[in-house]
Length: 109
Image (cartoon, rainbow, N blue to C red; front, side):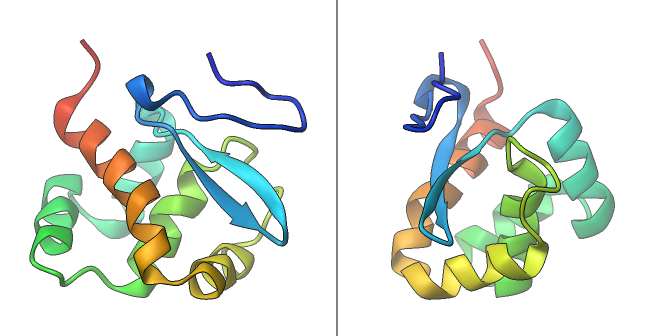
């Protein structure tokens, strides 16, 4: 299980990932509620996965998905999440994106 203390860890078996925002490690958790909220804004998640696989995922979509999956909703603005993605770079952002998209496709067993 993920540690919710100051040193966060991701439970990769549940599709969780980590993102550094303003120097603090934040947990991305693809819960049902988070994914429903993301889908309401971004459209069907399967289409999002397809766009990502084709290299057509927009920066705003990436930041939106991460923002909806933050384990502490409201703690950081969407703009701060987007800035974190830019700060760490798209290559580094690919790892948490793969974890979230993998969970969307795989589901829980």
